[in-house]
Image (cartoon, rainbow, N blue to C red; front, side, top):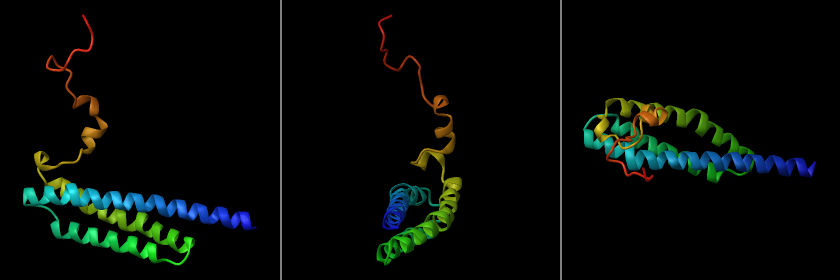
Length: 130
């Protein structure tokens, strides 16, 4: 029984840690890329993005203040599967209105079709002796 409880706690802690990393990454992306792009463009849901950062930080603080691993995992689940998905919608709305030349993150098109966005013309260095 003790071993099962230990494993359960480890799984809860692992899940919580993974969600924490994802949430912190989202905060960084919003603060370092999305908000500056929205400000540069002068369009987009700036106040919603700023509120999103506060919401994420408050949720992380709530997780850290939870008493046990199960409660932390439950709060992490809400953060990951509800809160972060809602915030993702705000980020997507910003991407839709910010001009591409001001958007500093890779777009879905660039990620999915990377081979069509890279140049292999004569300006690239030659790595072979022909």
